[in-house]
Length: 95
Image 1: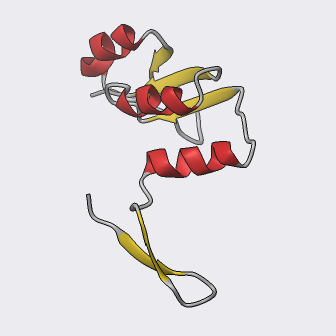
Image 2: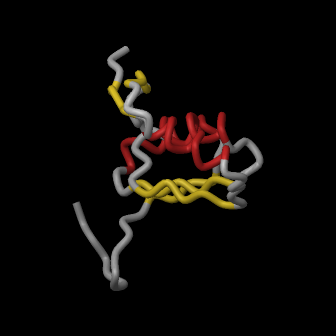
């Protein structure tokens, strides 16, 4: 794993893991943040939600994916999912 070098206020270098999404979620949890609902927009196969659920297992997950080719994978995750494109206006989108 690559590490990011950071310097403390005393000027001492410290090796920190890179700020990945999962690390960011763990930092949020460390502050006491406990989401009740998490929306995964552009869920693809649901991999991100699976990782997020390791950090926030009590949250309710809603997965949105526009590509119906991923429906089988989304269904296997066991979360509530929607095959739909999200946008600012109501509209029908055809492939």
